[in-house]
Image (cartoon, rainbow, N blue to C red; front, side):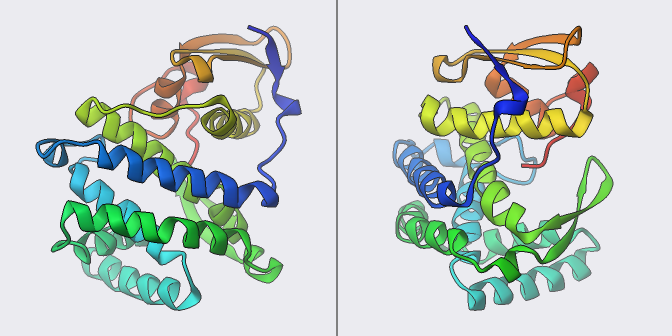
Amino acid sequence: MTTTRVETIRPIAREEVESLAATEYRRVADQLRRLGPDDWSQPTACPLWDVRAMAAHSAGMMATFTGYGAMFRTMRAASKEAKRSGGPRVDGLTATQVAERADATTDDLIAEIDRLGPVAARWRATRPALMRRMPMKEEVGGVPETWRMGYLLETILTRDPWMHRVDVADATGAEVELTAEHDGRIVADVVAEWARRHGQAFVLELTGPGPLQVVYQQGTDGEHVAIDALEFCRILSGRATGAGLLTQEVPF
């Protein structure tokens, strides 16, 4: 494999957002369509969710970002739930999304994702600069951070369903559709952010599924890490434990 220097990985540009998001949402629905009746009740890497609840969250997250009315309504409900439970607002948001779809059938959830995926992808990609510059408070690895709304819209809201596709595959044995053009682009962006966050020299050899097999390098004479690409993302997202440079979390 050829080696990719991390500094050559360009950030996800605004013109890529809609295509990446629409493709990811379509793959979420396609994966769910292939599940058997028993798959929906399987536990996932997210302790509070089985596969059905994870699908409800994915549908709810799409619905949240299809318009200002939907976003503000859901955020108000999330704040109310967070205040009630004493947890962070993001947990209140996901709990609200799942609760609102408690009576939906699995076919209903798939149909909602089919319907809202293109709408959410378009809406996220076309938000004005003023909104994209808005600050928002989050935590990564227990450390408070200030993000720009554009980071959420362009990056996190595509990484999130991508990681959940991996979760569903782990829970059920379902196929994870992977291509270098789509999934390789998402993983490369994760690698670049991971590299920026820890700032150390390294050679990262991603193994596993063919489309994700790439060697990345930053600096010289750094730590050598050889790991399955999906396991790399599981560790960085907090789903598994890593050592050395793999202790640096990346938000998903």
